Image (tube, rainbow, N blue to C red; front, side, top):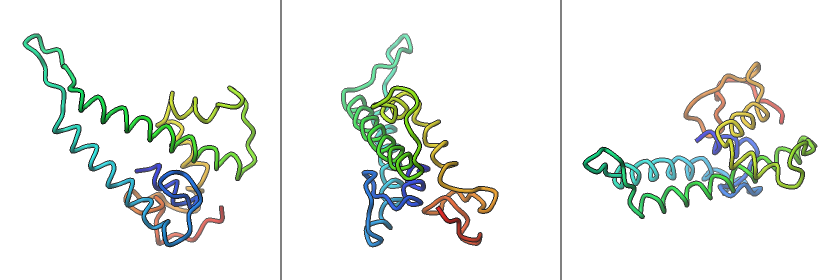
Length: 143
C-alpha cells in the first residue's frame, strides 16, 4: 500500500505512468484492492503440509505469487525511475538496470526510500490509510 501512496504523491497511475487527476484517484484504491485480493487468494491456496510438515505449494499459489512478484518489480522499477528523473539522480551502480535490480532484490527497502524521497516528514506527519500517506491536516509539501 505504501507504493500506492508514493504513486499518488507523484501523480502516477497503477502502472507507474503519469496520470490525469480523474484517473489518479484510482491508484491507491487499486493498490488496496490488489493487496486484499492477494491476501485472500494466498489464504485460500495456502500450501498444505505433508505428513512430515513440509509445505507443498499448489500451482495456483505459485502462479499468484509469480504474477504479484512480476507486477511489484515492474511498478517499483517505474516509480523509482520517475523519482530519479524528477530529482535528477543518476544511476551509480548497475548502470542501465539499477532500478530493476533494486526493485527485484530489495523491493521493501526501495519503497521505503522512495517514500522518504517524496515527502518531508518533518513538515507533514505520516498517516497510514490516506491516499498519499500524509496527514490531511498538515500543510502541503511542495515536491
